[in-house]
Each structure stands twice: as C-alpha cells, then as structure tokens.
Image (cartoon, rainbow, N blue to C red; front, side, top):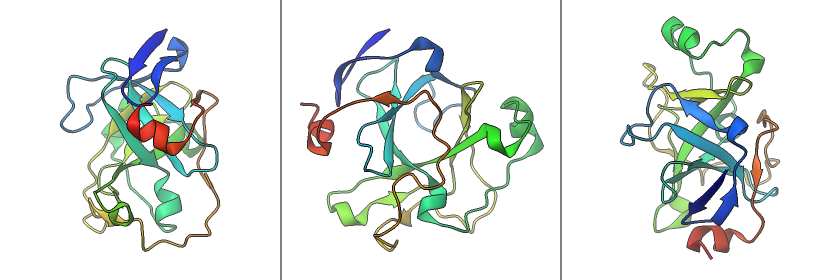
Amino acid sequence: MKITTSRFGSIEVDFSKVIEMKGPILGFERLRKFALIEHNKQSPFLWLQSVEDGAVAFVVVDPFMVKADYAPTLGDEDVRLLEIGRPADVLVLAIVTIRKEPFAATANLRAPVIVHATRRIAKQIVLEDDAYPVQYPLADQPADRPSHAGTRAPQSFQRCEGSPEAAATGK
C-alpha cells in the first residue's frame, strides 16, 4: 500500500509488515498501525511511521545501544498480550525526543515500545522501575558505538533513501 508522509513523501509499505499496536503510544491513542523505516543504514536511528497519519512518525533507537545495562522487566499481562514466547521474538525500541539543540536529544527508557517482531504486534509499556528515566540523554553516550549493534532488525524494514536532512524536512 502507498502512504504519503510528511518526512519521506510518498512511500510504498508492505501491508504484511505493518505493526499493529495492541496498546497505544501515549498521546496518540487513535493511531494503531505503524511501519518501521530504516532511513539511513549508517544511523542507529529508525522511524516508527504511522500508516494512518502520514504526519506522525517517531524517531526510535535500540535502547541497549543507548544504555548497555538496560534490562526492562515486562509484566505477565504484557507478555501474554504480545504473545511473547521467547526473548528472540522481541524488538525493543525507545522513542527519541530531538530538541532545538540536537545534542540535547533524549531517549525514553521508561516507556519502551515492545514489538513482537514475527507477529507484528506491539505496545508501549510504561515500566514500574523508576531507574529508567523518560529523558535519558543521548549525548553522554560513546560516539564510537556501532550502528544498529544489538538491534534485532526484522526483515520488514522499509528502505528510504536520501539524506537525513531530506528526512527531517520531508524533501
């Protein structure tokens, strides 16, 4: 299916690879279908693009790249809801907030998006552990970490070519 986005223009999304939210992304309760888009292979960042509203896309990152000792605990209810049978089924994403000053970007480690990579279902889960902040600074992290290290990238990434500037401006 073809969708029109504010960042990537018109893109083709394989409907069989759309992620269905079993619980909403906080503040975006009406949106339930998203595509995970890899914009630049050299970047650790991905886009979680709504297929229902082309103006809504979240920059996301593998939280294990941001904080190596990140160890979120999921409740039994969430494990059942997402039909998680084994850790290898799971892709964990942290929503990134980019501020006016790019080096002030933060990752939300308190409320990761948990994706069952095979079943294509997900939920943003607010963790009870207050050791994980909503605004974990990315700038304090080592600059030499490898791109996508540790991310279990499902075969369902959509590829979007072009510069990061093009993605940010939608041109």
